[in-house]
Length: 223
Image (cartoon, rainbow, N blue to C red; front, top):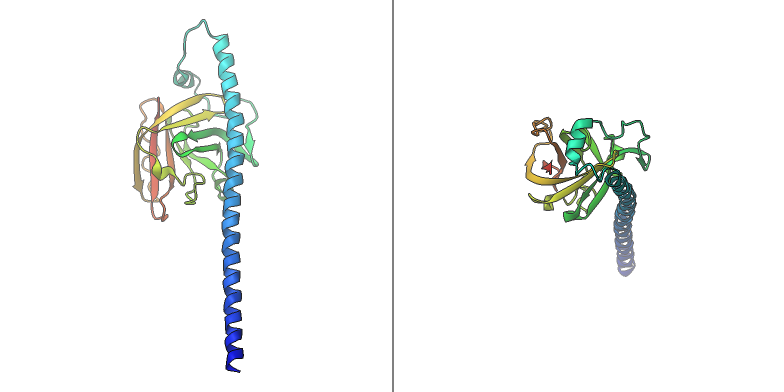
């Protein structure tokens, strides 16, 4: 009788262990699935988007080849139009309006920048929270989750001063930004959002640190 009870206890423990292992494998599998397909979908979107920008740049260079080289920042300062507001329909990604794309080679990051910040948009990509607009004069804040698995801004902690960020907007302007500051602050701190950028475009990348107690902030200035 004692052996029978002992056997039942072992059976229950074994079943619990198997269920726990299957649950863990299912969770890890879903996490991998989500990461793999989100990253691949984002990469495909960015590649198509930037190819269109390069084609537009080639057309402009062909048309203006006798007028001398132009600085994209100079052009933006003169037009000062917000991305996506030029009368053309805004591109979309998974049902969300897109205002541009961001590429950070140092951490192999390529994502569309979504127009609106919401729970569902931040589960899809990174998004513009505040500012003048993508590639516009002034500071523009772009936020993204840190899932600690490589998605979105999870690897921003690996970025350093001097690393490059490439931002392409819906007007097909592609600017290079250089990181010049990186720090942590409280979740409530927004004092640096409206900072003076000296008449050039800047971006601020914002995400949580690994334990979600503070915000990791990165400043970058257009070259």
